Length: 338
Image 1 (cartoon, helix red, strand yellow):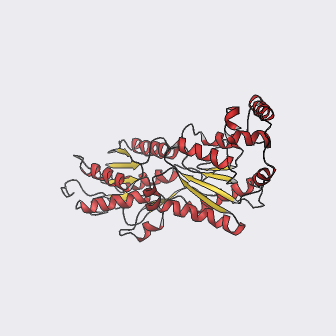
Image 2: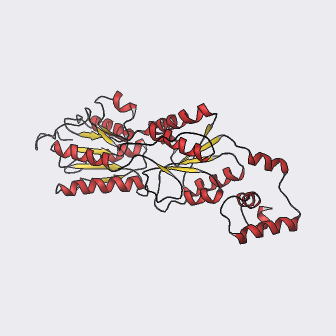
Image 3: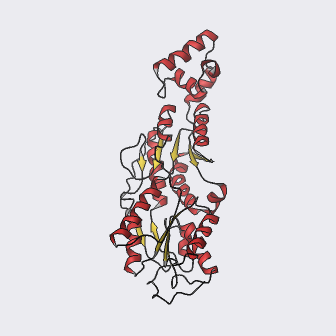
């Protein structure tokens, strides 16, 4: 039926159920094609589609090895599940490689009525997912700074640049003047935001970064970026990493190169995950309350699905947590040669 009308199965479902955002011309073409074929949706299938699945989707665009090695997602899932499980909901986790694969997955999940809604991560410039999910009639919530400019609700701490601003100010106060930044993919909005803050804070102090290196968040990329920084003629005395997992990899790479952290190299992470408190030296990092954000996102999505849940407003902003991986910059001429 869908191929005869030249549309997706999800569009056929929307035309018969009166959901989604189909144009009237498309809806009429689908209905006319169905009438010409003598086709009608199965009553049993329609009943199944109208029932709630009590399942929400979390689609993550990351390599499998990153998901397994990065506790950020464990913390996020813990926060989400803490709200879903007591209400009898489950979480369907999918890993995808790119935006086309992710969009196709949402189309399939909607057509098969497998989930009641979706949690979106990693907001991007010109993000196609919010309008797609609106068209599919799937409730959604996007993790990120609430700015009111998105087609779906957004959930996150305010002042997203505050924590990274504190991190750079902390390093400047310790006398660091050669500061590098190891970050994530350039298309991510949080990569752009935090990167702009790093550049602005350094510029205000009359400085430029030693380097800004983009990675895909993998352990190997973090190690390669650190090795590249340590090979610079004037290597940085401090490195800020876009997450704690990369910061841990960076500390290991620096120590294998014969440097002491923080005596020879200060390191700052981002997320405030438990592993940073177990590490030696304990990691200076930015707390962005990952579990609380996950729980708040789950509540927003449950409310869209018709559940009677009180809102969980997020207060505060990302904040720097100073521990043992940062110290005063070494005096010129005292850094060990590699």
